[in-house]
Length: 377
Image (cartoon, rainbow, N blue to C red; front, side):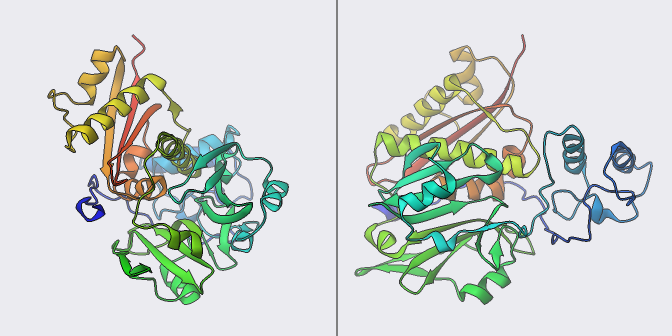
């Protein structure tokens, strides 16, 4: 059944991302290189964007490490000076990044002693519990717990690293020097499951201990943007690509999509989205309708699109965008697909979101992600 569920993605122009290494010799934000970060640097950056001045060394102004100096860097510097962020999201392994691979197999007591009690507990497609740590989105973390031990770890945070040599911003070439050639498939019993994903993500196996999923950007310098580890026996126990459909699993995916998106927004110097219950109700209803009536489209069977549905529900808005997807294995995979193809939407100026998820009988997941700016009138 799972073979009938094709991976359907929203296509768009992919933003150029080229990460620069962190260096102790560079004081990012000190654009005039006077040893301090202040309003003078902000003025210079603004004048540069208006083409009224030239920055001598753009490395100091590229505050998110994407290889460009643009309005995003201006926003980051302004937020830094207003003390809304404490540092810039220039990518590379932080000197203080916490190594996580050593925690695979650790007891639940070890996890809670180190990170505290989880902020929420979700269900995974494997059947284990995800301990969600989202109080500080800059340090977003999911720890998978089954039978009192750690069987999974996920993060897209600069504050964590897979091992001493792999973290957010690590080039794919470095990953493969460390972990070897990625798997083209995973064999479970007599069935082989293809892992053909065109560099969007790759999976590696460490002996028979655990599988490592590395999520990459899709630019010329392919680099890690998130990572996940799944215990070997746990991965082997999942027959197929999807979890068993349930209301708890659906809600878990919704909340994880919300958190992971906001973790990325924080990493890129943006304010987190706010959750809208009324929008989520529309998103869920639309998603359910697609599953029950067997279609996949932005237009529902009544000929309405998201703006029509919002007006009918009495939700006033200035602007709205909608993302839909089908077939990605869970929330981690769909958000990475959207970050590659629709990052301008997820990192844009919308304020509120509503998320709806539903599942076909074989577990194939359908996702609806609605973003909007409310009208003040």
